[in-house]
Structures are given as C-alpha cells and as structure tokens.
Image (cartoon, rainbow, N blue to C red; front, side, top):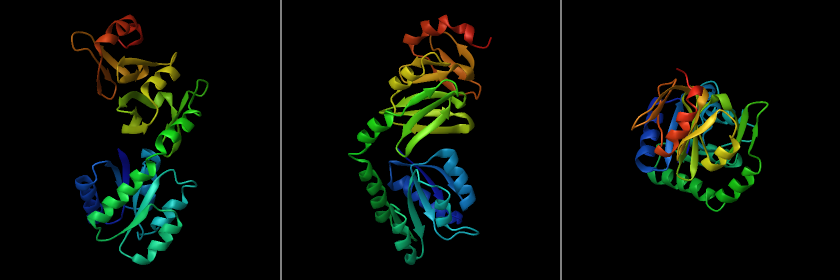
Length: 249
C-alpha cells in the first residue's frame, strides 16, 4: 500500500482528489491531509508517507517551500496545480510528475502507476541493502528499521505492537502512528530478543510495557492501555501463561 498525504489549501480540491484516489487507485491510502505548508510539514514528519500530492499555490508559503524543509526528500511527490507554467520547475525538482486541475482521472492513474513501476525491480535489492543497517541499540532503547524511503529510528517504548501484513510489517506506535517496513516479523523477533517484546501470534509481537490486561481462556486476547485488543494464538498461550508475572494485576 502506498501511504500518501494531500497538501492543498482548498477543501474542495482536497476532497475531490481524495475521492478520485479512493475510487481509482486501489494501492494508494490517504493517511492524512493538510491545508497549508506548515501543517503539511507536521503531517509528513508524523506519518512518514511514501507519496505526497502537493498543491503549488497556497497562502503564506507555496508548495516549493515545503520541499525546502526536507534535505533529501525521503518521499516521492506530485504537484497539483491549475497553472501549467509550474510544470518545468516541478520536473527540475525531480517530482514524480504534476497534475493539472481539474485533475484528469487517467493522468492520476498514470502517475500512481509510474510510482509503482519505479519500485519494481529495485524493491528487493533496496531491502537487502537496507537490512545491512538494521540494528537494535539497547543503550539508547532504539530500533533502526528499513522503509522504502530510507531508514527510520524508532524508540522501543513508543512501539505498542508489531504486526505482519503479507510481505511487510506494520509498527503500531503511540499517538495512533503506524509505520510500514519491508523488514520481516521473523527478523524483528530475532532483533528484539531479551527486550520487552514477545510473540503472541504467528503475525503479532507486542510490547509488554503497554499491556493492560491478559484475558485467558478459549479465545485469549491481550488488551493494551489504548484499549486495542490483540488475539493470542493457541500456540503461544502456554508461553504467555508462564510470564504472567510481567503483566499488571
């Protein structure tokens, strides 16, 4: 799934683009929207998106100003504009492309396909290269994980649980932040041995520090402090029963 953010000061333009993406781009997920450059920068830092749809003309700062705040652009970006004269500057900045308003559905689909094509053939090679840098820093309590856009340093205490989704892994963190990596859950388990993380399901690891309650029984589950419920696999129940002293009474 391509995690995307829309930055546009016009509510109608944001809504229209989001609807087009939801209806015609199955592999794109809009994880946030922003109505100006400053809030756009905040959303990017918070959600670490893969692709940004960025309006050019906005009050106070234009779309080009947003890019100035990111030295290496750890994401791909597409300009959305009603003015064709910005097209050359967009290409000069290595934009994935630009979409003229009103946005044409076919052009939108082509842009998304272009993004997907840019990943084909390089994804696995990049994953192998990035995995060389994956490491756990016990002293600092951090974990470095690979993403399509580069490496990301996470604080272990900020991670609530980790869940495998197909060939990728989602890290569910505090403040409803979810980050996707191409590191496998098996690799995570190997890295996080002798930490507060344990495997509770074939597809799930959880941080013991965030467990509120462990409900035993036929349909066992774990409740986190944010009230999120996680199923416990039958093959992991005995192990959990042996370490219940870690859990709050």
